[in-house]
Length: 207
Length: 138
Image 1 (cartoon, rainbow over the protein chains, first blue to last red):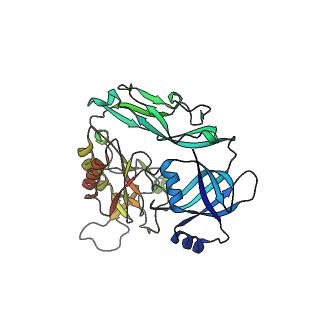
Image 2 (cartoon, rainbow over the protein chains, first blue to last red):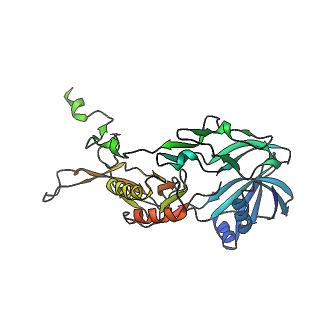
């Protein structure tokens, strides 16, 4: 899915100018790639929030710049409350790109229905390589047949046509594991003080 | 049993200062919901364990709890009725140093309502202000 977003060229740089831009309801952004010059931009915050909400990766920039770009990176504030910066990478629509796509589970695992099994969603995102126009919003992982002790790996995912997984195929996506009975019971005989890595000084002096 | 390192390079450490917000360990990685601290401070190993027990009692059989902090700092103290001097006290307990923004616990496999109740029980054990956060979109 391609969305068109309006961008403005930005001449100002520095943290104080960026704070002013954020206060005005926009976000600083940058456009780079394809060996061309980097362009500093500003984008509306609502637009970027919408892109992230819908998982859109490929965008058409309009306004001061007309280009096709990939939403490459999003920087969040340290508390994770708001977005502070966005990176766009130039791509052509036929180009093959590497992107991280979220995984959505579908169905209910029969193994996790009983009290003995517990569904563990281990890997939430998978990196795929696919044509820019065919980047999926998410990848569906069907767990309707997952029994106790079974797991689904990256190579068992149904990827869209033309896409290949970059994430190692042996990585577990989701599994139904047996419930651990006594948690924390393994630490019953732990020592009162940890072992020292270095040698004691007294031992050195005595030698 | 409370968490503690297996091996250490030095038995005692200086107090240090907590400056700024967390830049690492500040997002939900393993689960769907996280308990993020809003203040910096020291969290004792016993407190982390108390939180784990409180949360596990609630989510037992459904969700899974992840502990994202580890108490790797020894805190020493002098015995009662001891005169000053004669060197630094002996290590008494272990703490995890957290900055504002650090995700302390994560929870997966539960609904938002369950996560809220579970983390409310857990938050009551914590010595600092905390809040519920969700996983950021990819």
